[in-house]
Image (tube, rainbow, N blue to C red; front, side, top):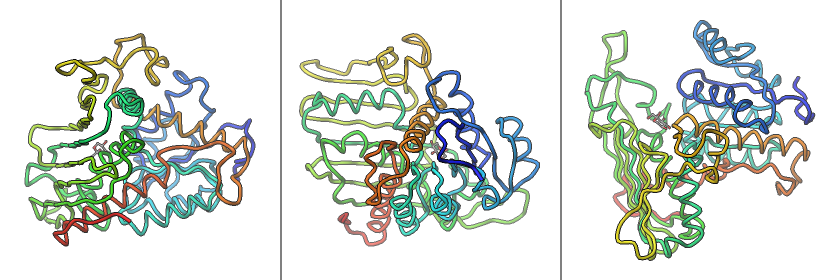
Length: 393
Ligand code: SOE
């Protein structure tokens, strides 16, 4: 049994999932001691999955001490549980881990359904552990710089928030079927996988000044209804959206327009956010993540700001100004913040009975934040089904 209350011991981490996200987070854990020496000590204790050979290979390459094929067998051996599995595996193991007093870091979207997301949020409210959702794009230095500009009033009153997340990996109708195309396993398609990032970033960037999203209108579309199952002659139905578009209204009257697609021919991982206010505007593109385009004051157009100065968020941990960072660094930053919150919570002892975390150890995006994103995704789906605008509670 791991001693999760001993601040001097390294944090024992168990990771469920060894594919794309397993690799991204394991890389982050390995980088932390070198680039963020003040981060808590971490032991990569166990990596969890179904395929024993693939697990053994992952454990060796990603630096884990052991493997397990059932999370239930090892949950007591760790202090922190990373849930990086497919969306349908988010709720049960995360809730069990929180109930066992563990800290939980879960990939996005929080869950396939709003009900499961609510159960996860409630478990987090009742738990002593930190519960974080891995919306990694919050941890791009240029995004945090943009948030600072908006909250300092440089853009004035916010009128427009525009977010697009474009990929093209399904444009070929014979592209293979995968769990991400199944409603029971994924919850939704482009909406949950990509739109969740956009909605989270929109709330993160303008939430303080424009308020919450109050109502939405959405449209979901599936272009190819069935796809070949790899290594068989079978086709399986696609039961999620390939693309969505949505309009949103913020509390202050700002207008949001969001879209994502897996059919945007020529776009690989193209996430852009544009914000226009009474005093200025800004544009961010993930494909140029070290830059922010900003128009403020009397300037007649946008200026490209290279967000790689030592004073920019996280940059002093890496390279001198102008020596750009990449997508994988966002995982290092979020792991640093999450594990620091865990270590603080551990030193402070558990939360007070009211759930008031006045003893430190807060991490955002929390399960609460991720639940609020999920409410908006759910409202977009309900709007598509009804053909009406949906008001958020
Ligand atoms: C696949 O569409 C995917 O890997 C998403 O699941 C990630 O969240 C996004 O960052 C990149 O695209």
